[in-house]
Image (cartoon, rainbow over all chains, first blue to last red; front, top):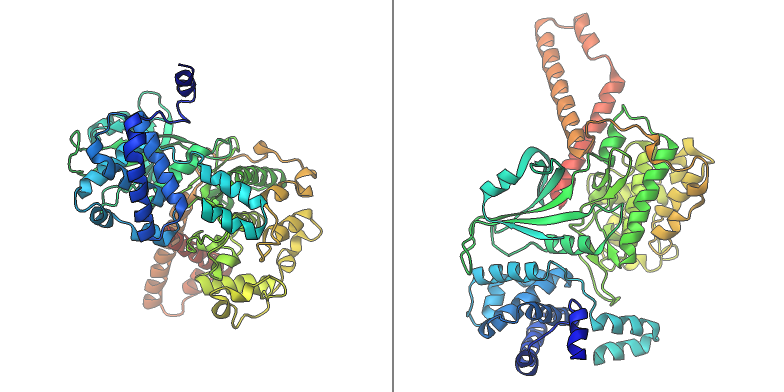
Length: 154
Length: 396
């Protein structure tokens, strides 16, 4: 019960997620996102952010249908690319590419609708702090040689 | 900031009464409108949505909203809310024509208008106050690890009471903590672009904003832009002829930049910055200007250091209200209208002159008509400026 209270208090920071999502689908989604990022040559920060967006979205809409998780993951990736990726990657990533990566399961309109839903649900707040930023912060105080190693581990 | 969803265009018209179009550019339009219920005047910045290749929300919008939600500062124009107008049916419907607007407080003046209006007499106290407020806003933005990337006089808005509001975060972005990340080189309106961008650097940092602030300070002192280059090459020629061509010994690794060879060839030495502002000789402000317009970004002072510059603590003290601003708005679109009118008048007088020439050759009339040369000179510089503004708009 204490834990529940704590979660309620920290509601906006610690996403409340369903058990099923954490135990089953989160890993699958993250793995798929990592593959996607590798294909696109995107940096790891984008993947971390997409995962975070997804967690936050699902904590607000726990009823979101499981069959659309891929659409959600792809849209999260799309939005975080737009927000922070360097320009050659975000220019490369467009809806038709996303559709191909999702094996033609979804249509253009789905992505556009999903994007709006995602952004409105998160109240357009995309700058939540992620653990990776702390790693970068800590690593910036370590000497140059160690830094590469730490970031690579992350 | 709540985002308000409106389901059709009629509802939008019921809510707001459009007054006029304030600005128009590649990014969309800015409308001045009155909210019918509260009678407040707001600025609606339209976002191009679902047009052309339907790529969802544009990158610039996502970044702009994101930045604006991060900042909370009196000198940064804050976003009231986001207005989504959609004609879509509920659910997974096909997206028909829909619009979105960012709703801001309406701010009547901007620095382009104030500087270009010959009716407004500048004084040091107000310039100091404007610069101080602008720099505080920039420090606030930089403290979040963000860069504005499009500081120019028309993006610095001024309220009636002299409060400065930094606006237009469409190009702004957060700096990536990874130092090896490259950014898009094509940012900042041309006249305010720092040398590192002109030389093709894509690992720049927040110092690009400091350069732009320096350009604005110079614009205050001169009442015209300091580097109104017609293209990138001309920009470099203007900057380097004043500051000297940088070499590896004056700016670490500058010769390794992509466009170094192209941009630094054939540059003649011109008057230096201190010579250009000879009328300000002995004033501390030139000192600050020199520090802001340092071509090497590593030697350029930060916004925070600039704020601590002795100029700000010297008499006269910065005062918001030292300058009486007109009740009519003085902004970029006002300046454009003035130039358009001047141009029209010039064309008319030119036509009349042609007619007279045709009717009576070499009459005294024609001599009179073509008499005032200083005015003509002014017109020429004005048209150049006007062109600059139209071009700057296409950059966005």
